Image (cartoon, rainbow, N blue to C red; front, side):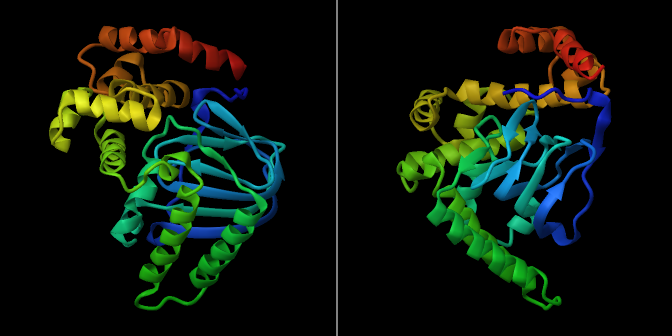
Length: 289
């Protein structure tokens, strides 16, 4: 479901968060304006109750009770003017996540390294009650006066929450500890961090120490998409953000994404979206008029 967004000139920078971590509890929080923010942090919204929409990139998600909404760093998000929600918001940067035990990395990869995946997770009553307890523990610790090991304690609580959320995700309920699933999550992490420098499946396969065919087969088994489709999806997602939420020219977007020429970028974009970059940007400019 798409949302009628303001045109791309209304994006705002995310505010810095002390120590790259925060957790807030909101009681019927409302939004009088609807600016777009480009997130420099990963975010988790646990919705106990609410209404309205949260737009993430070009997709709008309904804010309803017993839901989780996930935003990855780099994504653009905006709440609708009629939005209100009661629940929690966790924000954390990669430098903070490095404090979490390595055993939680698989969960982060599933939840935040594939921005083309569905970012809304329904939660049943039992899981919601369990998550609220853990969010409360984390917030209580966060509000305490600083002490020498506080970041490590917060990271440990965050690890528990991430594992519990990831267990609700289909990818982790289907052989999460298998060798192939670990390779797949490592591939997602690589794509998320290197899509601007390479678009070749062979490059990623070489770094993973497997063949191109093996990488494509495991991506199809884990996600129903080929490796090339996942790489292209990341590129298209970033291209759409740049076209919708920045004032960069088509040429600047093309070079930002490491295309050799604007024509090469335009051909790639139209092949994957059925619209030229100019048409895509024009559609959103007209929506905001």
